[in-house]
Image (tube, rainbow, N blue to C red; front, side):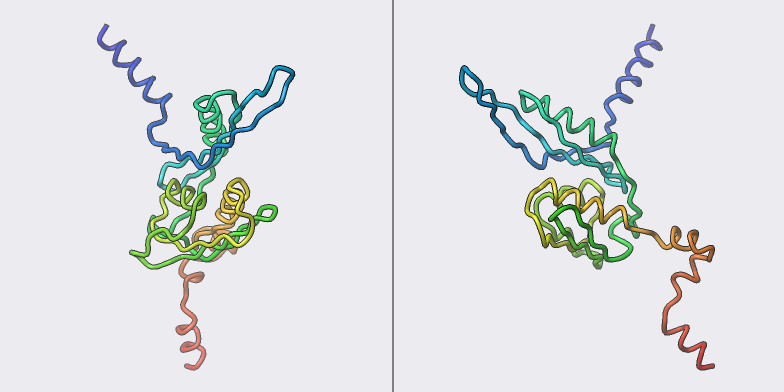
Length: 187
């Protein structure tokens, strides 16, 4: 009997997905005017991540806030992407992301910089596990567009290993410093 309870406990832990953390970015109250007055509904925007290089976002609509948040979280878990991180703390290279009128620029930075980004972008970086990044939103201030532009940019992120594999080269060839190439050309 004790084994059965133990197995049941493990099964529940697996359904909970404790490795993911979520961050509520925005709640929007919308109303529909009907014959008897107004009916209110809620739209929620949630970012979910494991803080180890995976992140996703989702939106949910419902009559109650908790139900909208639950729907958004479920959608975010289904739409997760993996982003390669350098040393598990920053980006490999500077990137720009776009979605509609939203435009964001993300830059790699040295250790100890922290997350310098505002609002919805900060939530994405925290859930992704980035510790040092500088970002700026240059277009739309709409949180939906900002998050989509951020995710668009993060999809373009490529590690040296991925670039080397795509070019059929070694990682060392990709990471060679320009000074060493110039010195070897002079010799």
